Length: 241
Image (cartoon, rainbow, N blue to C red):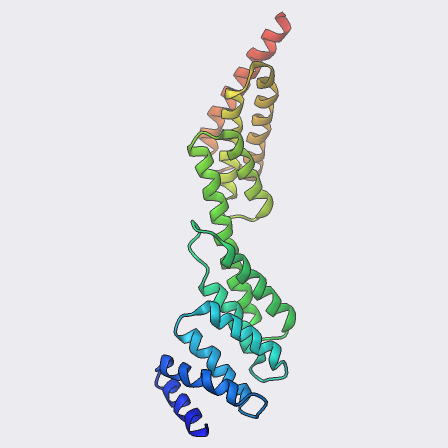
């Protein structure tokens, strides 16, 4: 068994990870409860990581941390558990379950090892993952807008701002929320139009208050004046009745 262990380590060092994995898989059972158990299991998890099987690697890194909490490699194992989820996080257009899982795992690491030199890296990776979630929500809102679902678009743009107050998309969200509110008012029944044009005007003020010299302000002002004009006509019509 010792000869197999040395052979497995040599395979690993030569980056022959599949061959190493086969040997370590046998050895983790043989060495259970011995002084070889810890390093054998870590090598085993590492082999899955190096072969790109991040789902299984994450499981074994997490299990290593729980099985050997006093190990010198326990901290590294928990970090790599989170990093596996990060590597499995897809592009923003796809389902973001792994992205959410990665954020949770990095936060777990930071809570468990707040003094670790990996905390800064964790926070940077969390920011990157959150941007991916933010981008997905913003693109979903844009899709509602492009397909004429103005009420849904208005809600979606507002939700991006609410969920991500410092969003890189904040100006666009405020602008498209205003346009969505205006278009939604246009589509409304007559009894609801005045109320909804007023809401659109409030949305315009939110945009220019946040971005007084914004790139969308000239176009937004034209729509704002149109809102005011239509609201005045509605109010004048109501007074004549």
